[in-house]
Image 1 (cartoon, helix red, strand yellow):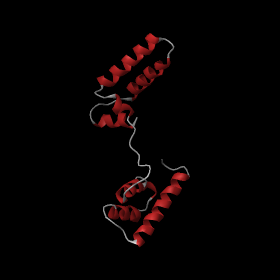
Image 2 (tube, rainbow, N blue to C red):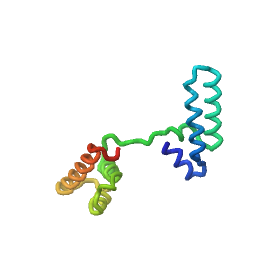
Image 3 (cartoon, rainbow, N blue to C red):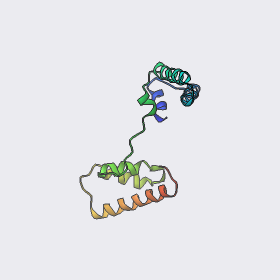
Image 4 (cartoon, rainbow, N blue to C red):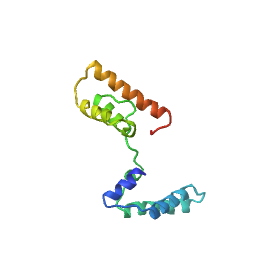
Amino acid sequence: MTDIYNAASRGNPLDPRTIERLTKLLGLLGSSFDGERAAAALKADHLIRDHGLTWNEVIAVPKRITSPETLSELCGWLLGHSEILSPWEINFLQEISSLKSISPKQRDVLDAISEKVRGYRAAGGLA
């Protein structure tokens, strides 16, 4: 649903009432009646297109980095948890994110921040 709300910033708002209508239409796709399923699918498609959206924009799942491959990706992933990072840690990550390599001391700090974020996630923090 993230993209639905992002669409609002592009001038294609789906207000809560429209989202509720779409949800009801999609619920009818489980009907045992072929005609009811077809009508619901058509109405849902029209609803989305009338708002200037595509189905890809409505149901697109943001790409998640499951295993950061570069220093820049790792720093970006860690910065995505800035609510638990100190201002110093945020600044550190921003500074090293564009470097080609880091020192052993910087690696130790990066590892400590990574452990902090992983511990937070394991304890039920943000996904």
